[in-house]
Image (cartoon, rainbow over all chains, first blue to last red):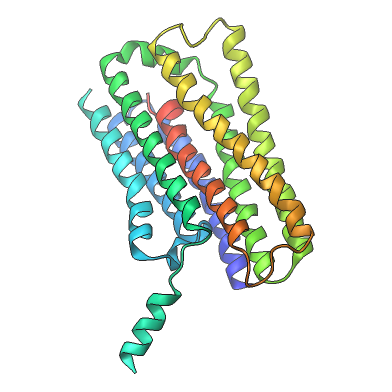
Length: 85
Length: 195
């Protein structure tokens, strides 16, 4: 029951974070901060999916680390490329 | 007592689903990572073309699609939990709702493609549309494969093929579906939000 409630709260959190990222991205006066916030939100959402939906919280550390690192590495690379151009 | 406890803890850490599926997921994530980098690098080389192309996209559909895939993932994880709790009927219901959200994604994405093609944009229009259709189209095919897999496991759940201690096949399909979701979580800001 508690796990079901946690999943429901996380689902609502994911939806709210999605709306927040769309809102931040539309702010014309905060291009750099908007970029950072949108990418950070993406990392948080992907972490929630990996840990709680995929169930990697109980997986061997190597697989968990690979999955946990995937989106942060991609997001920071994209962020760096976007920042430099 | 401590070493025994450590061994037990280590042994109890298991991948959800089959190792083969996780190797496949690893290969898919690598392929998409390369595509993301190519897209971002190309955008750096042609910022005006990408800015113009992105302004033509329907970000509302992108937003709705994100909601649809997140919701579908939520119902899939509920389906797996229901099977583990021996609540087969709940699991079937959750899977059907998850498939419904997945279909909503396919319909919305198809509408978006139709709008783009009707407006005269295609793979050969410019470098932005080339990568836009390549990235989103590749992901679209993954969503369709995921839907086929979810549709395949639903009658197996109904037939009681997955039981409390035997959910590996279902978990493999669920893991694939969550991977499709994670990929879209990167695609959505990359293509629609970050101008």
